Image 1 (cartoon, helix red, strand yellow):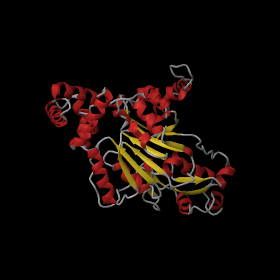
Image 2: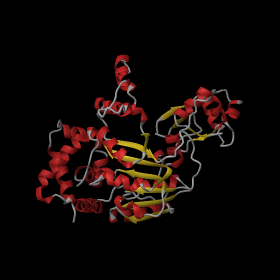
Image 3: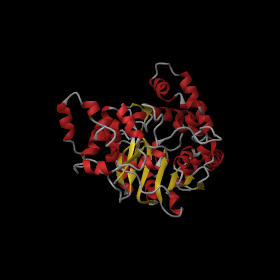
Image 4: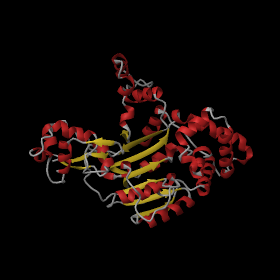
Length: 401
């Protein structure tokens, strides 16, 4: 057995022992939404406009126990969903989860990401959350699933970041040292980890970080095992992340938390530093200023525990709503991922509270997927800048007129 096969077998054993994620199974659709798993919301975020079709194919690559898969089915009522995973135990839970909640437009396959080419056809949306960083060869993994992305499709990826996880890495190594020749016995590893946290002084840095950031979810052994006794993990920084992205052959469409990656929030008090930041280029000398800016941000705010982002395969539109004429001709509709409407106080796509003005609420109530913005503004005195504000907040989705 090769090293890669041995690692894959060890990962499968972990998730057969502790199926992950361990969210409870429900006899109804799961609550709320994750906009990254909603085709209309995610496509609009990436391109600035509504997708032309809803009857799409979705691949959940590394679906685990089907928590994300279940949402992908329920949030996309016209889609056909496929889930693949290395762990037979996790897949058994995923099948039961989807059957119980009525997520019946899904099929599961016991496959590694490396073997995604065995799946027939291509996919319009590929979701790969918390998987690539557990592969012995993440580049091979991302290339395998990228080969299944249809032209005009988008891919949502989540991988670990090294700067915000260094305490986790230290505890992982400490547990491995104490396990010695019992490494691979994941129940023993969880037991040792629990004892370590209970024994260390309260002011210990590892203990403090665990309590302030991870303790709530790590009450469950499945989560604790995934974090502290995983047999394979690769953590990224901006430089290594973009090596992975470049190897995919796909186009980087942006991080799903764009506000974090704004340098102004860190250096806004000093215009001279902002000017310096605007002149950055990366170490390769290729003038990739955006990547250098991202690297500066994570160095100055090293709380990045993970990166969550979108890739795409051309041709993908990039709508430009700077033209008043184009904006007036567009047909708006509500982002499907908002909660609390038609109240003036609602949750946006990221579950952040938004307080609407009376005119903003009146405009949103008029968005019936038929009227153009120009037709709505003939009766609602919001103005185009008000519409652009709603668009920038991802409260509306636009179809070109």
